[in-house]
Length: 106
Image 1: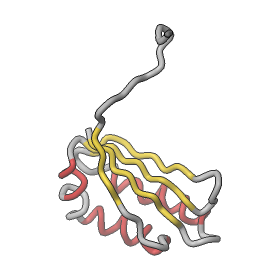
Image 2 (image 1 turned 135 degrees about the vertical axis):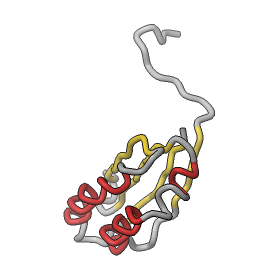
Image 3 (image 1 turned 60 degrees about the vertical axis):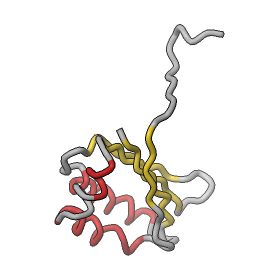
Image 4 (image 1 turned 90 degrees about the vertical axis):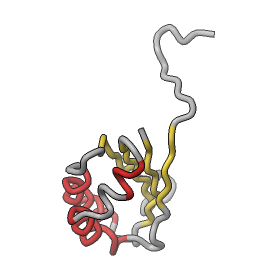
């Protein structure tokens, strides 16, 4: 599993419209083979800053499977005009993970 991470800075005053349009655009990304899930989180300290987290089966599901499709063109038309500056998108793989359970005691 690959985690796509993008810090999104939305033009001030457009946050509510961005969130509405993001929900509309979500149908395009979620229709792609290899897509697992995505989350949009709003920053508590800076109201126009968001983090986008998308889980993909493999890197190419995003870089080729999504970015080279008609779905991406629709996603871009709906969302890209909100960003200033344009976000940097990076991909991560898990090297360690621990989840809390009732038996995690020291």
